[in-house]
Image (cartoon, rainbow, N blue to C red; front, side):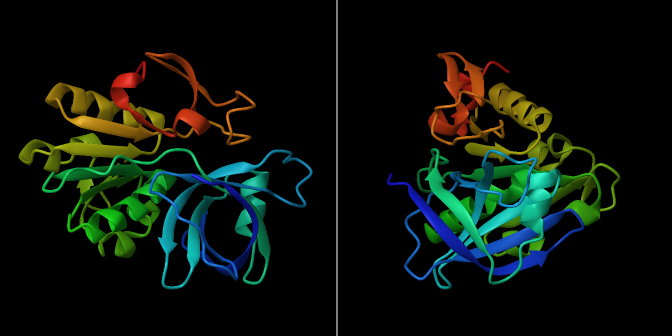
Length: 255
């Protein structure tokens, strides 16, 4: 797939949480094709502590508005500067990068599991599945109810199940404790979020014999497989997550 380097215009910057900002980016020409699971490398300007681009998952592509959505967690100097962007600003992006989630066969029951900012790529995947006539189940986890992100958007494309560690929203516990995993059977699982969460989901999938993919969040500085800082140990040796992933069949991972 062709890659682009573009100065995208910030159409809006919405503070959806004290730590998270939803950037909606656009340009004068039609945005290129992008697949669920791919990511963007963004340049952080005016940050003396940030020398390399930052990888951010593609949260959504709104074709009607010609917008690319990025969900930014302001956790370091670079991302805090991104979170301060305002409508009318520009953001230099390299995109789309990496591979994508596997589209399931028709009639297969799909579970999309996310935690924290890892829920981001699952929204666009859910949208694509719904467009194919499939209704996914989202299983989203957070520490507390106020940390749950974009629930109204997820509800547009499928059933939403929720867990919180303190029990303030949905069922108490981690995503792997949710009753939907005990009461129902799924044909395919896709997950993104904290590594311990993904490892737990992968163990569940292996035990049940379910095809499962994980979108890894290794540090990816170049996005092209050149810098080798995102290497992951796999059954095939060390692979660059940005080039061979970020989406991997969990049976390939040494978890």
